[in-house]
Length: 223
Image (cartoon, rainbow, N blue to C red; front, side, top):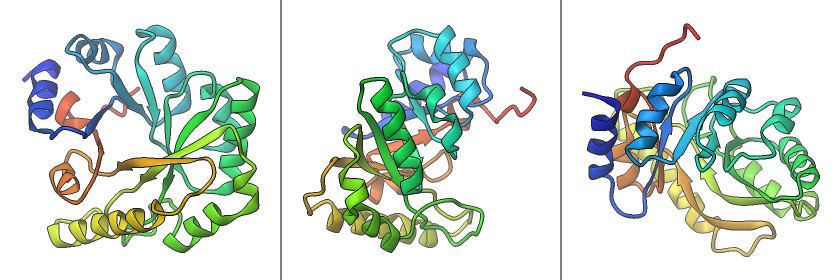
């Protein structure tokens, strides 16, 4: 099937209130344009330079999501235009995003990345670290960022029970934390679920799924 057909097939499956992020990393512009022409506006990229280049070359009303592991020294390149930064996993990174957002005279929306998997390779805050961050005085002083919710990745496992349990743990954490009035927060987004597990993720409360290979085909690492 074409990119357009894949995209429309997935969109028909998504319930109301769930946002589809088309994960377009390593994919050529013509494939993104095909998805754009089919109505897609939210695209996710993992690499800062690739994101900057695509943002320059593709339609200006695209909402660009940075979904990779963001290094502090690269924030300045995406600060002028990024729509949502998904993988914020430290107060230090939030401070840098706030600094660059201030320079751009804008507020940058972010998601805090929570570590829910059973693997050492995944980034993220523990539930305890996240709460500590939200309660900190330093966080309260960051006026040019806005926390919209949480992002996570489940373990890379064939066990649906494990994946479901991990997603559920974040939903329960989010329900508890978002009942508290924190400064600089406008909760509501739960970003988890990818091509292999997005249906489970939606059943467990996800409001934003990040789907790449099911739309564009397998990744192309020969950039």
